[in-house]
Structure formats: structure tokens, C-alpha cells
Image (cartoon, rainbow, N blue to C red; front, side, top):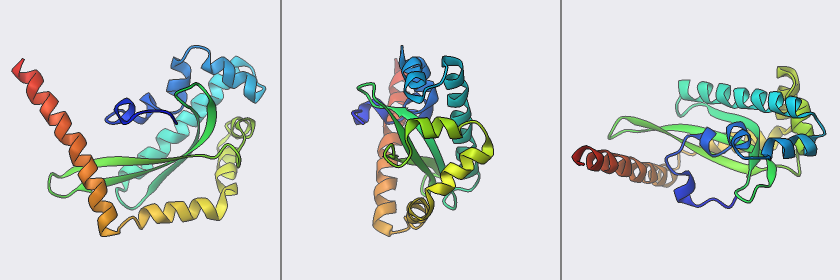
Length: 180
């Protein structure tokens, strides 16, 4: 989506994707309201609904590490300002040798399957949002099962190595700041 690894590694999801980023960028909320054909107030409320649904999916995933994939459909913003519909699948894994958990997010632009106005229309009630996710059907279920079956030793090893790289950077930065 135009971001470099340095733009996103080590940041919380809300600092990179979804409602908080759109609200923080000048004019992005107005752009969303125009594209969805709703008022600024409605766009803000629906963006808040989608953010709450993403947080709910993350809570379920964090409560069940390695066994549940957090699924949310959000409005996202590319680095160049283009808004799109984002399927976000998040998996929590645990590094066994340091007893630390980490999350990996997998994102996909699904604007062709779910237009922006359809997402915001579904962001009015739990039942409408659930129906939208259900409409993605077998393909979404297959991606979810693939993540849960991520158990291929090489894939998990690679994810653990990447997580250790980030943790090592955090530890090094903490040590350096303590020394200064």
C-alpha cells in the first residue's frame, strides 16, 4: 500500500490502518463521506463502528492465541491517500523461547468484492456487518483456515525470526536509552 517496513514495523494497528489513521489525516474523513455518499457525521460514526468491530476481533484472537484468527473489514488508506476496503486477518503467536506473544496481520484490498459504500452501509449494525463478512463466504474461510494451519514448521520459524528481529531492536533501543 506504499508503506515501507520502517513506516509500520513495531506500530500498533490503529497507528497504521483503519479509522484512527483516516481521522488523523486532514481531509480523509471528508473524502470517505463523499465516496460513500453519507454526511461527515455518519462517516465518522460508521468508521467508529468498524474500529470497534476490529478491536472486538482482536480481543477474541488475543484471548485464544494460535487458535483464532481475528477477522475485520475496514476502510484503509494507502500512503498516497487513496481509500480502499481492507480485509484484515490477525493471528497471535507465542515465541516459546522468550515466552512473548506477538501478532501478525495479513491485509488484502477487497474493494472489488466490497465497494466502499457497501462497507459503510453494513457499518450500521452488528447483523449487517456480520452479513457482509458472511457474504465473503468460502474464500474468507479458506484464508482463515490457512492461517490457523500456518503450522508449517518453516513458516512459523520465519515468523518467529521476524518477531525476534523486532524484539531485539526494542531491547537494544531500551538499553541505549537507559545508558543515555
